[in-house]
Image (cartoon, rainbow, N blue to C red; front, side, top):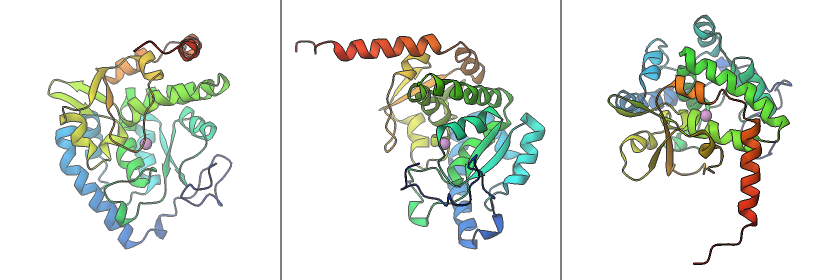
Length: 268
Ligand code: CO
């Protein structure tokens, strides 16, 4: 693990899980969570996908930092998922193992007030508000389970970097086409004060149709608005198009990347 990560890893178990320790949040932290929640709640009716909007309505989660146990009970009943509290970012193998067992890791700490508008590392607001509601959608939930299993497989194939791009352009920054126009389902968008409107309304970014191989070879930047979004038609499409064995795709992309690197630059 990189040592500059935020969060207290000293009490984490082998799977990086910790106690949420809900009573240790301060009143200021609950109030900050509420303010973040209220700001985003003004944007989501216009910019979030219907599945997310439907799920958040059943959660009554905006007044304080949620108790993970209570949310897990509801999730278990609906799609068989649970939340597991973690100190922050965790290594690939622990992350994929949790997903492969229908457990979603949620960071316990909340950002500082000065980070109201922007934070690079995921905190409890991003993880909870962005990711958790969609776990109530059966197809999305099943897809994320498959992604976790695919992650463990990608580790053996040394292909995590390629697979992580899929997560980035779907689970974090994905758009979905609806009759009313494109809407956000990516957690990085749903939890962002600025990019949520930008991703739907700005004429600047590219919005490309979902294309698996293109995504697997498209690099991304983590510290600015995305210049390219990929748009799915439905979670069923995401499920269907990621179902094939990626092994030959990884091999093909690897060999075309290395032959591209060997080619001399084209004459100007
Ligand atoms: Co995230």
